[in-house]
Figure 1 (cartoon, rainbow, N blue to C red):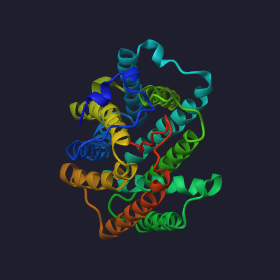
Figure 2: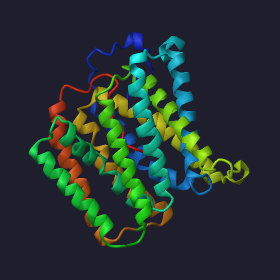
Figure 3: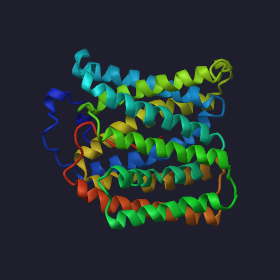
Length: 329
């Protein structure tokens, strides 16, 4: 992958310029990086939560990532490039509060009780909730995409149907609720003014969401009971990985993919990441899935694949500036 595309100043890379074609090897490296980085996010979350409270871990992760993104953006574009016009505040605020704030916080709270593999299968259903919202606010999805939504709901129902290993109703509901909130934030961001600069826009979203979760951490008393000296080395490493690799590097590579690969190809992370998460959970944490969970997960992933295959071609001209979709992580 040509890393110059990730570091070139905005003045040398006008948003309206067509993306330069990337070679097969660069695309393979980019896709592999997104699969591995975002697929390992669930494992990183689980390990960080061993000794760091969920709201503390989430708020600190996104606040640190926001400051890092701002520092990089200021270096490349100048401090003035960080400023947003007032008309974009609503979009950044709403999407930051819903996706980065509520969505990521609910996911961390739920993952205290749910294994990484099962969590990833529940999160994989997020595109289905986006389609459900479109049934209400439009534009309506294609008939085959609607079939995919129904199939995905059936798959999620199977995951909840019978208690098996890792089954925790409260935790699973929190994870599903996080995907619903993320879908709502994603839908709103498509209808509100957002920054054309993805780096700056994401930094502001992370700052808004991170501050909101920090307030929730203080209000809940979680921060008051937190002792930095009690954090284990494994949790520190996992948190650092989440902040630097999963949040900053993962987003940067995914943004590069959106500029250099068909969106159908870039979107394959939605049904590859859960497979990576399940395998890592088995290898590192000795987790396992029952036959029912494997079947239900396969139904969910097949449904998501159908939705993406039917809906992405309708967006073949690409996403508008500032509309980069990112999965909850």
